[in-house]
Length: 284
Image (cartoon, rainbow, N blue to C red; front, side, top):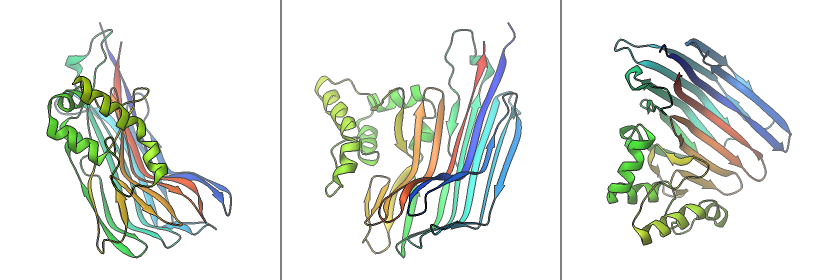
């Protein structure tokens, strides 16, 4: 039986909505979508500046899909932004999101759910400053080492050290001291699941509707220690929450958001920066 591979990848450098003080929709800038038959796509934008004090120098994206030298179906999604400034509170020199997938045709078969090996190697953040404080963001390769959902589920179930690390870094376990109440409530369901699993001895990553929310960030280190960081989240009073290196894991696909902002007073809105997804599906 002949099998067709349906490519899938997209990349987004910048986009979102601002509700206050100047209500506006920021369109998906420097975005690219891969044709289902493979090929390439590009996006570019900038310089950008709006009335809410949000600007960047340049943004680019690229997606591609083709057979590699080993005969695997490979896809790539990258999104890069340079010179980001949000109201002079958040400044970043450069953010790169990079998601790759490799799918072996040998594993394909009718009725099977095949998983590509999906990795985020090369994703990074350079020159992050929050409120004038330099912040070092260390990238962790744990989720790259378990590049399929099945591999990660098996490792989480069998490796207590890995399980404890994930529960702490992804805010799945007991809430850390000082965490804001609204952030703690958001992850409360994860803690409840982890507590129940500890009782019956059957462990699995907390998931909802097929989605596991993790992060490629290993550590956040403010230079002067004045910023409050919880897992991959920096909380800034009178500004909002900064989510770093979010990785959404589904069966057979992963989405990376290198930076996502939930803005509060006085600027209110939601912004996604350097985001990409990469995978594909053999059919039938």
